[in-house]
Amino acid sequence: MNFSEVWGRHDFGDISREIASKTPEDVKRALSRTRGRVDLEDFKALLSPAAAPHLEAMARASHRNTVERFGRTMRLYAPLYLSNACANVCTYCGFSAHNKIRRKVLSDAEILAEARVLRGHGFDNVLLVTGEAGRVGTDYLANALRLLRPHFSGLWIEVQPLDEADYAALGGEGLSAVMVYQETYDPAAYARHHLSGPKADMEYRLNTPDRLGRASIKKVGLGALFGLSDWRADAWFTGLHLRHVETVHWRTKLSLSFPRLRPHEGAEIPVTPFHERDLVQAACAFRLLCPEAELSLSTREGALFRNQAFRLGFTAMSAGSKTNPGGYASEPESLEQFAIDDARSPGEVAAYLRSQGYEPVWKDWDRAYDGFSRSAEAAAAS
Image 1 (cartoon, rainbow, N blue to C red):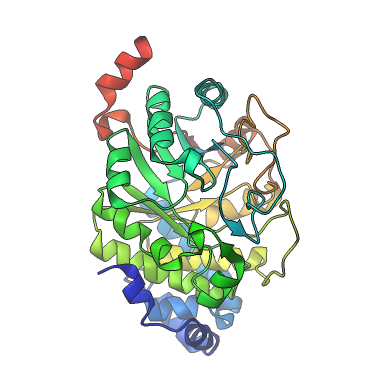
Image 2: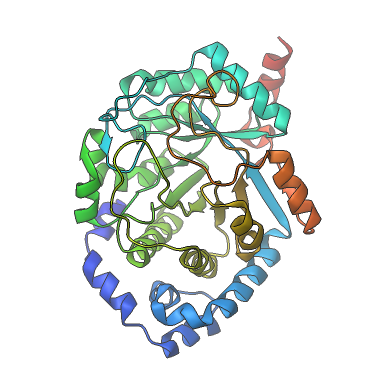
């Protein structure tokens, strides 16, 4: 069964109202089960306005569960933007096709130049990001993976949804993880913010994690872009999606992210409020729902907030991010997809973590886990 069938059984507005109706007693009941198995009804309570007075208790439980499972470690990663070419018209994105900007697709030499900068910072895994355009399809991505395989232990992508056969082919080139954020699970908001292009097909995007699971991709990233609709309902549907992938594709590792809308090229749009305290509540609720999931905190958030929030359930942080193609080496002034807030270098972020008793980790797993160790070493030596 694809997730779109599961999603279709629930009305977004009904879920929003059910979350709003939760009581303090519902929250206390959910918190009493944090060492057991929090279910999706408990999750509604933990996301509800009634949970706000209990945020300190949620944070303590989230921190405890995270340290028990992951220790005091924090994996650091960086995005490598390959292109800002895009065929979609999306209201919230600087790469949107309706923005009159110079489009850029990195050449092989430029990809390797970006890789050298990131390796110089210490990163041993990298997230490849593109807009959605024919020029950066499966063949282009396969070539990028082949170029980068000798230099990084882990290769991830955050690109347009692909067919199952395409994911399987990229897995053969060393792809280990795919981030595919739904943006919003609210069908009315989805249509309002995705005006044209392939991304307007909501059902195809909803079912992307199913295609990834069937293609045996090792890790899938889920998430919503908070601010497009009611954040509490969007978070609950993300949890529903997580539970579906956990159950149907149980060999697949899961990652969750909590992006908030940031300034971008193009007209500003109305934003549904999602404050820092809301982000903390969502992250703690997810940690209690799923003790095994990776929770990621991006440079969309400011340094002061990240310095405090990372303890509350997060296991991964981006650092030193550039959101424009060629931003690390060749095109520092090209258009950003969105403005970052934490501008510290990777070394500065790592130093702060060490000062707090945490160990920065620069890779997700070793090449040998993917079966690429020998070929990677041979390529690096050639």
